[in-house]
Image (tube, rainbow, N blue to C red; front, top):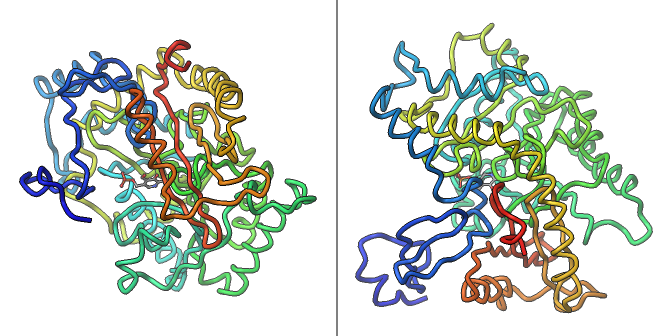
Length: 437
Ligand code: PLP
């Protein structure tokens, strides 16, 4: 793809070499304001990040107040702590959701995935089982773009260039993708059991004493398009993890922090919770980069009984300014009951999508939870025939939507058999009825 003249001249390397990106100069509520003066409703919060919109004066004030009255940076590897980091961890964990009791804050979702994997490996070392280094993940999953995160991501096109550096200590199972993979006469229960059997078989094949953890998104995001599991799936997975001591590592970087209508998406799965959970994106509402890893008390107990510290760390870990912004975001979400609001507005969004978009001939499936929805496109509804990847249909939809003043996210997933051509619509928690329409 030849670079456009603008892209060739610019010193910033954009992700696309062909399109000239429009410059965003401001935010106005849930909209982006472009240099041309045009306003675009950000109906996907970027990649599911800006959950409080793009202009939230309370967060801007919290950031400036923090810089004026507190400390901008404290090295987390030094013998110091800081108020913002401690307070954010308290906000998230003082009620110990599912037994999660410790947090680590890093800068991106990919770093959080890497940290989660390394913590799992360290946990098994401290437990005297250093041979437990194998992870089981799912096909067509996405857990981030660093090499560590790509090792457990089943998204083939994102892995392609880097295959030679990837760990072979990862196996990939079928995702819980009912629209295409559930048999015609198969019940949800039978489908969940089939996938659970596959999981158990894989543990037995690798050897239960070699498996460190199972890594999965609770609600799949960008690759399979806002895909919740069928009821009962996670209960079975949790039970199998418990049976073999395999750590359940839930990636809620895209689907967590309120987006699905509960603070954590796993809270709708009737399980006690994960052993390790990653969070990001909506955690700080996009004002300053921030993500995190939440650990169950049992992980901390093993780590603290062992070598006496974390083997993992970054220069900008637990950045006070990022934590101050996230504290402000989380306080607004709590004060304004925005998680409950997300569940309510999500019902309205579902009705609108099913009524207005569902009947269109190229719409195969509409799925999601809370304010986290996707539309999957097909050539033919009845046969569910997928578009060829060359057509990149979702990209056309995204471009048309932009012209109409609506920013949504387009993604081409691929299961190894099916092209999952879809767009994601996940508006901010503050979206109004009128904006939803
Ligand atoms: N995990 C999931 C489920 C994601 O959707 C993403 C990003 O889209 C990541 C991890 C990686 O996050 P980041 O892009 O912040 O590194």
